[in-house]
Image (tube, rainbow, N blue to C red; front, side):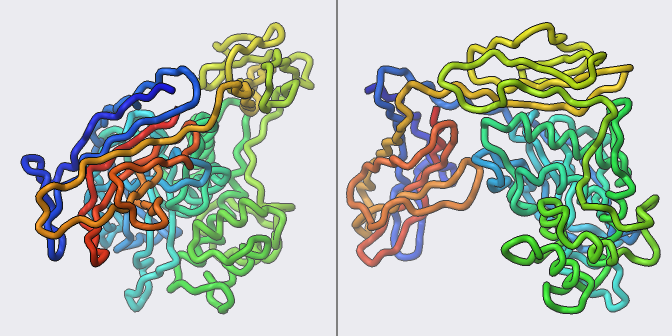
Length: 479
């Protein structure tokens, strides 16, 4: 068995002494270290440290329909990386709310985790210009921004119903709520494509549909998107409500929840339910359309369903065999029903174009690979398709993290035991790992999953059960 020890990294509250005051006693901050173990003779490398990117002076507006929303709470999130629908990381270092004109400014208030980290903006609550000046707690709107490094001094963001519908529909496979948007490491590239789709559905600068970068010949269903945005505006431009009451929000939430397990409590949740169940209550939802549509052009009759699919006159390529997990990776055959179409593909995560590798025969794979492809006929590109071919591992897959720490030696209140906590990387949702307090200064976490990163902290406990401040946080990446 081989192990790699993570370097000690003390918490940075008082770097000179590592002492912390908590209630009745002092404890020395625990210097937490860890080793990742795997049966076999591998050498595991420590996780690389990412280079933070400075923030661009992003600014923008929040509107409900065409009405400024004042007092809305703004948050910039980095998409999660510990699973589909995993918790996103809030990036702003201070609270930001919109002013009376609905505007906000994020200059100097965030740091990009990396330039490629996918980010999105959320606006919660606020006053939609009600005569009484009241607020609507059911307001939740968002805008998908894409790679954090793409934000510049000229980035101006519009957050409204159109951008919210576009972001929610595009990211639906990777979200559970406006604060839980993320992917597994294996489908991070596919989530990046979803952010691109959001940008094609809606222009984040103008808050209108269609968006930017739509390939020639592809069609955005902007009338249907505008109609959904109009419908949601009836809830946003109100005093709120809940499923079961007769308010605009209440009726929308009840209709949106018909095919799900529970009713949504905010507008992003309502849109997400509609996106996931597009054939449920189609006409009743359409009938919520207000007499005067804030977003036009819109539908004049109810659609067959509430899908929002970008379409192309050129059929997309198909894969054979179908993507999946294989003991021996197959050669991948690409085909298209249009015999005059040329197929182009990539295997490096980039978006295929007419400048990519032309398909001329079966694609040979040597490792787990995501193949992306488009077909182009008459200058019109099909929709992008992607398939991941995973090589089934023949290596042992059971990892464990071996934690250890130094016991405090000069605490006035004796330390009786320790509690060990873990959270997904970047999340503040720590979970207690030990079922009973542990007097040992070591702990083995055997519940980790390959490919994920975890954050650990340890807190000492006195005889009365009072916990100290946490140790340094230690991040561990499982290969």
